[in-house]
Length: 218
Image (cartoon, rainbow, N blue to C red; front, side, top):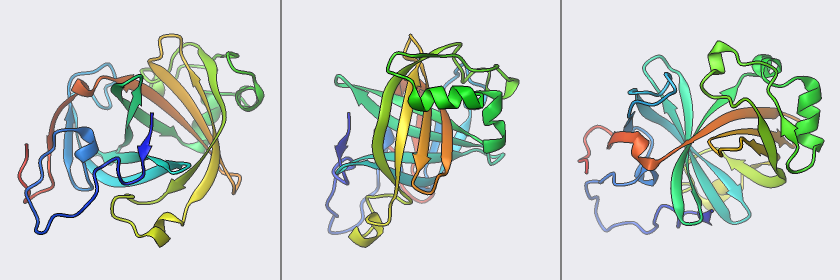
């Protein structure tokens, strides 16, 4: 499901710069532009985003790049390319502000999320308009206490010293029965908690990609 750090993007520098081609979401870098097809989620359907930043999630020696997408209203969507059984798909996420977490999971449900066994059913407290198209009616506990680290920045271009500057966390994941939606709770060493709502789409949910201004496209 994961690829080796840096090797995920292809390593090695060319002797001189070449025009980049965007043939895969993993080719995207900061400043590039991405447009989605028409989807159920109005926040992304038919919308165009700039890759505002690329960060890295690290699990052992294997990484997940996270693309921070920003639209013209400064709304943020988070994109990862995931893989399972040889099939790749997009994981699109919204991170829930701390003040809005109780509108999705009560304190008791958060405790169940962290302490419940695999397969334990979890039902969001309500479906607010803000997250209506991002929430499933019910989730089942999928993964328990997965250890990882967050690296601020794109691991393709960071020094070894910068890669060592990481924030460690444990995560808990729940998915709906159709495996189309997920909840993920990350708890950092500092005690900070972050709840994300994710949904999964085929790669063809992306209509078009453009390199940053001044570079050739595919």
